[in-house]
Length: 445
Length: 140
Image 1 (cartoon, rainbow over the protein chains, first blue to last red):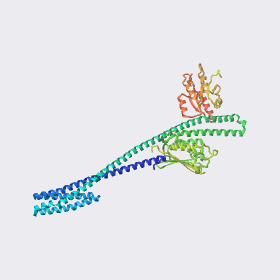
Image 2: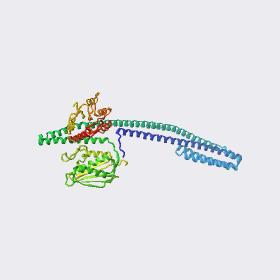
Image 3: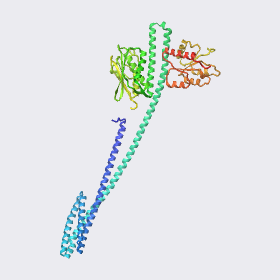
Image 4: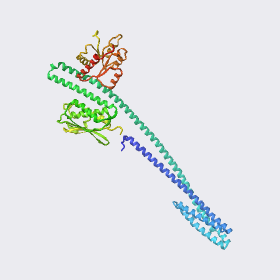
């Protein structure tokens, strides 16, 4: 799931903009559809008009062909007559089909059919009569029933034409209105899109500007912090050196006259001055780490751990039993990772030196495509309910009289591991020892 | 002291630090011909007044001082065609990388971070004096 960093206002703006675009898009689509439908209907009306015209022509043709036949008696003309009838029937069928949605026109077409049949029956009688008596047949063709029927058919078709023309007119008008609706909504859609894009651009620009300002501020804070640590390093150490130095001189030159208690007190002053010096140094190390960048290289962890243990053993001549498993190599900042191992191993040493048979186990195992390293001791351990304080700077779980320390070591370790995009965690029980686990991420993964 | 050749010139504004350094040097018998100047301006005057023939065997120079700081004093000494042969050792509280780099760029002869513990300071001064005053062979 994508994480949202937008504030409520921006999110609301986005939803409103999206709604506007969807609404306008929908109306554009609908208006365009209406226009297409009206245009199709207009097209159909034109076709209907055409069929009406053709039907009219056919009826006139029938009358003419019949008249010619009566004059010439050419039986070929009867074939043309049949063709004209077929054509008229065809147009009738098409008209019936195309005006199905129009009851008025359907009624007229039906009348056209009735009149047409009457007409054809009359013509048949005339043709039959022609065989018997030519003059009678001629009089029948000019008789009023035949003429009246022709007029009625012409009137009917003319009415149909009028209505269809009216319809065509209406539909074309509607199509014109609908295309203008479409054009309007589409233009509004385009303009809205354009305006929204400009708004988005402005918002993005503003957020970039805010970020730049924040970065500049962070830069200033960083510089201030740097000059602060610089003064701490210089100005705090100077008086401390005097305290420590002159106390030492005092003890050296007047130690004999001060007596046992006096010497003990001087010793406390010196010890605390040293401790403060250590605190300042550790603090500086910790703050310097923040600005240092990582230089990745291959680290042979097994070799590194062995080296560190040898150095530490030389300093602490203990009876620790070491259990070192095979340790996988890794990639990381060699200097920083050495610091991590130094701090973790010396911690284990420190907190297990008071037990009978101190044992420290160091090993690694693969997990989630990376290597987890661990260091396990059987020392004093700690209560897991304080585990959240474990990696915080200047936080300690043991007092200074029991175990030396400034509370920076594990904070430093945590910071280095975090800089390597790794994780460190601990498991412990009071008087049963502590285990530290960590992994770091390979930069190429 | 005026007619004797000054062997060590200590330029240090903090008189307590100066006293510690002098005491440490005294312990090794190296402070017999030592001159302490607590003001960097005065120290430059001592070294650079016209016709000055003052060539101490060693200059111990504090880094952080008011008015003219140690880096500036160092630059002045090392850019002088005659005085640049005098060995200069920076004595400072800070182990800031940029100070160390800048000092070496200017031609400092050694850079020493004063330890908080006096016994360690003694060791440092001891080695310092031994090397520069007894072992090192300066140009004639």
